Image 1 (cartoon, rainbow, N blue to C red):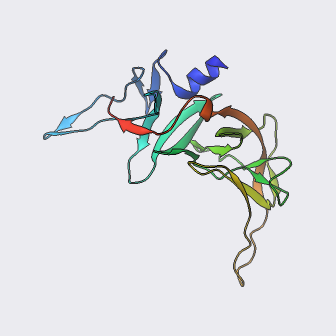
Image 2: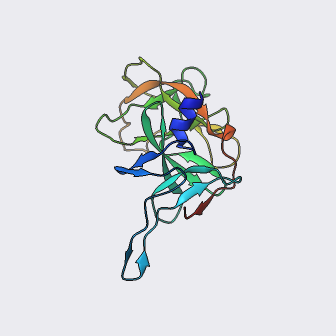
Length: 192
C-alpha cells in the first residue's frame, strides 16, 4: 500500500516525471523567464501543506492535477473545498445505486484517463482487474460533490422527441484508495 501511495502522489521520497522532464520531489518544472515574465509550475497542497500534485492546466475553476495509481495516470479536479473526479461517479444498473458499480470504459489511446470518485469518502474507483467492457444501460449514478455527502441520482431520460441513447461501453469497477485518508481540505495553490 505504501508503494502504491508513493506512486500515486509522488510524495517526498522519489523524483517524478512530468511532461517528459524529471522533477525534484515537491517541486515543479523549472521556471523560465522571457521579457520579464516568469512562468512557473504551481502545486496544489492540502490544509497541512502536503502536496496533492502539480497543476496540469490553468483556467478559472478547479485546478487539474495528475496522479498515478497502479500504473494508471488519471486527472483530478481540486477546489478549495475538496477533490472531485474528472469522470462521472460510478454507475449502477439499479435505481438506488446498489449492486455492482460500473465505470465508463477506458479509451485506450488516451495518455490520461478520467478519475472516478465514489463512497466511502473520496475513494478512487478503477476498472476491476480482468473485467471486460460490456454494452449496458445504467439507471442510476453516484454524485460526489467537492464537499458534503455523496448522493444517488437517476440517469435522466432525454427530452421528448430526442431518441434515447443506446447502451454505453461500461466496465465493472473496483475501489482503489480513499483520498480523504491522505489529504485534508481546504486546498490551495502555491509556487514550489
